[in-house]
Length: 143
Image 1 (cartoon, rainbow, N blue to C red):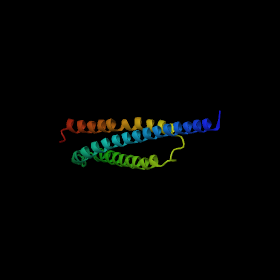
Image 2 (cartoon, rainbow, N blue to C red):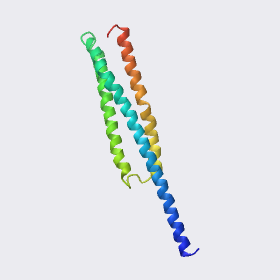
Image 3 (cartoon, helix red, strand yellow):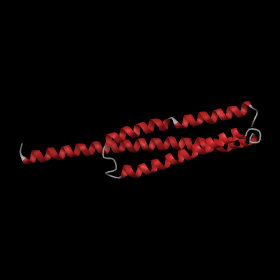
Image 4 (cartoon, one colour):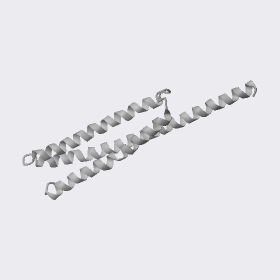
């Protein structure tokens, strides 16, 4: 193989590697955006349910302070958890944009896929808890 052929082959290998890294970076960015979307849905659920559930819980605060505290604690914890996740997705955007942020983009894709799967379970879980609280209040005549 002459020098020119060798050089062109080397350039082609580097081009393939750069293309693969670019594809992986785009996949990680997409997964991060999907996590942000799920967290946004969770925040929407909480922002709609929090005033109503806190108002309902305050109606029974004198008779059942533990229930009131449980409802308020759950809503506040989930709100702060979702906000922390949203901040993490914003930080990840910056890391993804940095050229050398992840040395192994294939591992980053796997990690973000796992994170995406976990995050996709949060909105239905929070909605289920909110629905159970609503049902419990309704069953006990609290409106």
